Image (tube, rainbow, N blue to C red; front, side, top):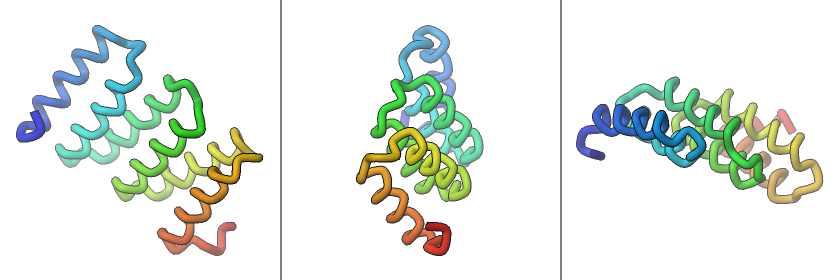
Length: 110
């Protein structure tokens, strides 16, 4: 399916309909959408994944990093901010956000 990302995206959508509680399928859909060149759609799917996820620190980090990989920097920053609001005492959350700001040359926002 990786050589036919459009077909992969359609299959993921069908699987999501059959298994709406499986959040991992939504994350996988985002990857196929990105391969098809639909980065905004991939971003939307990642945000849906986060809404449906268990809300762990790891879920936020996964989504934020994936959004950053897709060059959806504003959306990634919003997820990093939500991460730090949800887990204000977690040093990993703060460190990840600081790293993101450094990598994206947004250091002045700290």
